[in-house]
Structure formats: structure tokens, C-alpha cells
Image (cartoon, rainbow, N blue to C red; front, side, top):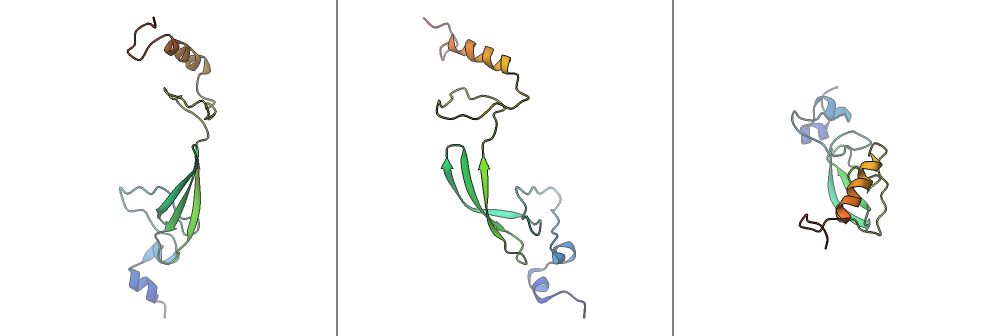
Length: 120
């Protein structure tokens, strides 16, 4: 007997999904896939631990898998500096950012007020 299992019939899973390899429907994006079955996952909750680090509770959407895990999200490098930086936050510049250009823009912004004119 090599037909679909009870769970496969119950959840309508055929083909790759039946063996734990879900395929992404055309035009649909998956943010993060399950590390075990490679199926889509959903975010159940999240908690910001620090200003640049948070943890996310994820649940695999594949009912045959059922994996639940914690992902971490951390700001690791800056691509474009903030116009209103927090002096307590230190996120290094990416290596591809031209530091001389950033420094020049920062110096120029110190000389201008919020309306774009010279400081008195």
C-alpha cells in the first residue's frame, strides 16, 4: 500500500510537501523557512531585547513538521547613517560605505540648521 498517508489526505499535502519539501507558490514570498522541512513559517510573537537586538518566536506552517523556534534579529552594520543618531547606539559602518563621504556629509549637516540655512 503506497498511497498517501492519513495526514497527507487530511491536510491535502501531495508531491514535495508529502516528503517534507514544500514548494513556494508562484509569486509568493517567504520571509524565513523552517530549518528542518524548508516550508514557510509564521511569526507568533517578538520581543525587543535591546535597541539593536530582538528575538522572534516562529512556527513552521507545515502541519507535518510542527517545528517552533526562536530567531534572532540584530543590526550588524550600517549602510546609510541615521540623520538623527542615538549617541548610545554603535552599529559599525559597512565596508562598502565610503567613510570620507559620510564624514563630509556629517560636517556639512553640522553647519546647517533644520531648515537648510546657515547657523547664526
